[in-house]
Image (tube, rainbow, N blue to C red):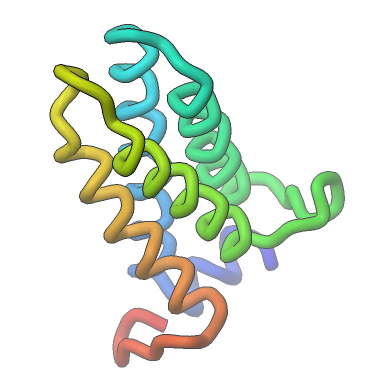
Length: 118
């Protein structure tokens, strides 16, 4: 499904997906600059793939959909929050991104129906 079709069917879901991806990328960049780490790089990659999946048909190249990418992003964000060490950056962006990615995952798989959103 391309961006225009998805925008016509679920405009709020598009905005939630875009916000989750952008917040994850920003949080990952902050974490990489603070102390580095593999999970921060994975957070940047997963967030970038979620954002790119909105504008390019990635299903043909990586064979996963937006909901699956949002689920991968959700798992990475939960791991980043769970394995948080010491005095790293504040987890506010990551918590907001977790909430948004969870909503996108639940709505994307059809496990949650919110009238007006999807």
